[in-house]
Image 1 (cartoon, helix red, strand yellow):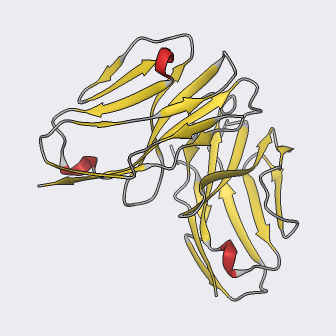
Image 2 (cartoon, one colour; image 1 turned 60 degrees about the horizontal axis):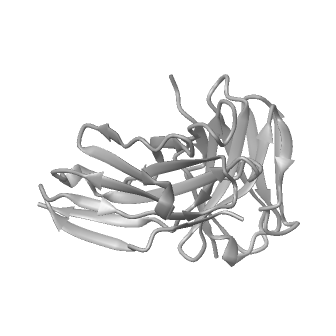
Length: 114
Length: 115
């Protein structure tokens, strides 16, 4: 079975540009989570969805960040406009039944904003 | 609020040594789950174990073992006879019933096993 798929794996962009990160969760999983990993702040939950509905976006740092899940097999995290401090590794994870159960993580997208 | 502390930032041992990674947590909730994840150099986080707050039995899986002690709010992870392939960053994490499905991670411990 395929795991969580994320694209692109690496993204380099210039400050001010729009960035879109993509995630395909494991089929049958009803929860999807977006995390950000930085040296300074570690792993932080940005937002999570249950059955495609955003439940808690309190971790989204600013209005420049937005996330959508139009269907059970696809989610996007968009940053517009991007800033150098957004440089990080962004992980998507999915689970069956929520955060109390094992989360399956994607390989991450390493974002560099110049 | 929930908090997870991994005081060991980096550990370096020689292959075949035993090593213990410490994890201390804070929560006011009586129902919670603790996790350990491994992040190898490839970057992807890999689930290792989950424990709920009502089950203090220690767990052993091959060379890996976990010691959960509610009295000291600790959930430590021991690797016996370490191998080079165990080199990774290891994260302890906590989610509480009242924590709104938010998994809170510790800062991680970078473990290096030298041949």
